[in-house]
Image (cartoon, rainbow over the protein chains, first blue to last red):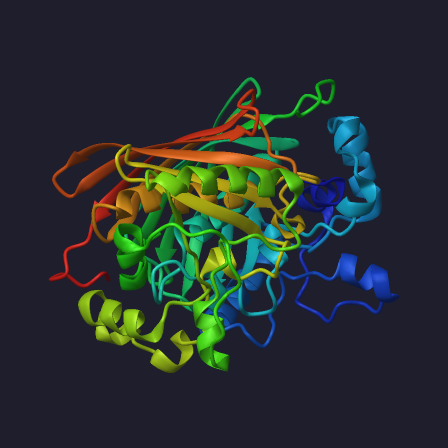
Length: 230
Length: 230
């Protein structure tokens, strides 16, 4: 719903693209917070690895950047966000420290396996996505809600390049179901900015681009730090 | 995405409403398949239990029915579905037997806690929903994709009363974010049927009905058993 947090904001603008590498060694709790999930793991199929490698190649000249992805918001960024946007009645801090990013809350390979790449000049995000066996809707296929989720985060990250935003509308046409464990390409493009409104388009296609699985538009609103969210 | 399966179809039409009760004793694998998740568990807040009890009272005269909810499709229903709708290339049966319903794949209390109630005469489904800590989008709030998911299943179940359907469009306006661990009421209504198209409206409100969190429309298409899905 909302593209958070300060850490990701800095990432989108500044971190250089790197070849995938082992997560650096950290102490226990820090390790959970900082593990980057947008890197290959044993559950990734050959198709997903192949596409990932192709996009990593595109990163070499700096035109594309791989975006890291975390299960939890780092404590500092969380505090920063809460100070700016969240009303005090929702600061149940102890409980909230156990919260996890929805798209990273399922075990390796069973949920959302994905990596995003950002092209600043083209205002585009490409997300390579493999839906695990626990994302099932109708037997054998990815749930419509899981598809909406991957659209929300990909289109949202596109809008997020312009500031901290919240989803205001998602309009999704489901054209062809996505088989579980298949790899698809989510392509989102920032189309227009009108004041605090950001309009983003999004498609999901098969890797050979022959099948259009899903087509969507999304509207995001830039947040006003002077107004609480609720 | 798709309202499956034969077991649920039978349920929507025929099972009488009952007071919540312990799952009947079953043998190991059968137990996993048949556990009904739409019953109170220790993670449910007082608000959710209270609302659940109110709706169970409404079931007593038969006007409303509680709908059970499973993590996996029973093998027989799965086979039935595959025989009718799924192309042979997607019958990776061994793998697919490990698939789980997206909305029931997170551990108790951490994901989607919900119970649905169906009013046949009014063509309405009400879903009582509590979003767990692993559904986080922006810090402290339910992810937009998780909200889309609960809308998809509630509106979809409304359409499902007319036959086996697949989501064709979801159009969702996010008005106010939903705090994690709060309880909200999802209300969906079958509005119109045009041939194989079913139009459903859906809202998410706070329990006191003072806050409209989300408003959506959904279009579902009745499946044709003579055509493969992909």
